[in-house]
Image (tube, rainbow, N blue to C red; front, top):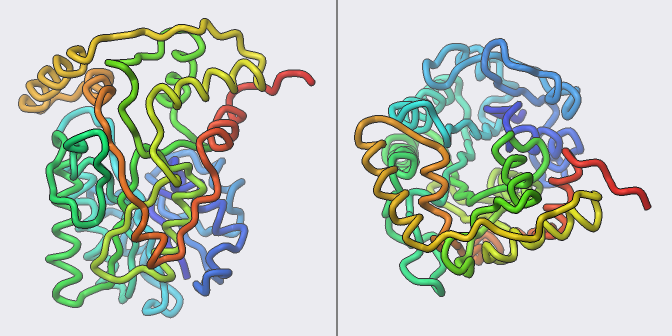
Amino acid sequence: MILLTGANGWLGLNIATMLQAGRAAELGLDDATLRGLILPNSDRTRLAAAAPRMEICEGDVATGAGLDAFLSRADNAKDAVLLHTVGIIHPRGVSDFYRVNTEGTRNVLNAAVKAGIRRVVIVSSNSPFGCNPHPDHLFDENSPYNPYMHYGRSKMLMEKLVLQEFVAPGKIEAVLVRAPWFYGPHQPPRQVLFFEMIRDGKGPLVGGGENLRSMAFTENLSEGMLLCAARGTSGQAYWIADERPYSMIEIMDTIERLLETEFGQKCKHRRMRLPGIASEVAWLVDRMLQSAGLYHQKIHVLSEMNKTIACSIDKAKRELGYAPKISLEEGMRRSLAEYFPRAAA
């Protein structure tokens, strides 16, 4: 049995699609029963289409409501695998980071232990590690914590509670997946806005644009999640991303070229170029706002735009057999196809 939280979220829908296709069974996992958790009264249309054989339960990790029902009656609970993808990145206020990312994970794990679930794979982030100290540096699994703002701190505290409160005492087996900026089908409006800004000549290029960003196409990330479920070592973390990092120039140029040559979109062929200090000012404003418990998505995103945030996936390759199949151009092609009609041949 495979249980999936956040089943109708961006990553959750991609994992559900892969589960429906039988990839978990190919890796030796028992997928005879699939069960997904979604927020009460949320839209289940896309989930029902992506994974018609998945049972759908309603609940809220932040309050714990519905978790016992979601995790109880698990077929052969000791052989069941829980994939926990719920998280909040852009909240209304700072307290939501901790309510959902930290305490929500504690609620999920307490309910899983109560239900006798043996194994869980949990989505973490690059944010507990901040930005790379120099352009040639890559984060690995031994990199020290250096959280970026409250989102990073909430995920750092989540990782620590998983390892200290649940893995160390032997309550449950847990594997952490450190995921960077991801892209792919079922993306939220903020990702589509990014595409439109590039098309319309408003894509923000801060500094020279040579800074690197690791990205994870959602199919690559979903594969990494299932590999962690099947082969990951309890108590360990794995960076899961595309084969290599990309510069911000490469990311924007790739999107622009695909929009114009394959999707018939007329592009302005310019960027909104800002000096590097723009990100530093945004960082200061973001920090002040978050210190007051407030959050502003655009300011926060701008604060990161000139930073290198890049990782090595060598451990995942070595221990899991992870081999990302989709790189930036094909991944962006599939991402764009969801919202832009193909140009006539």
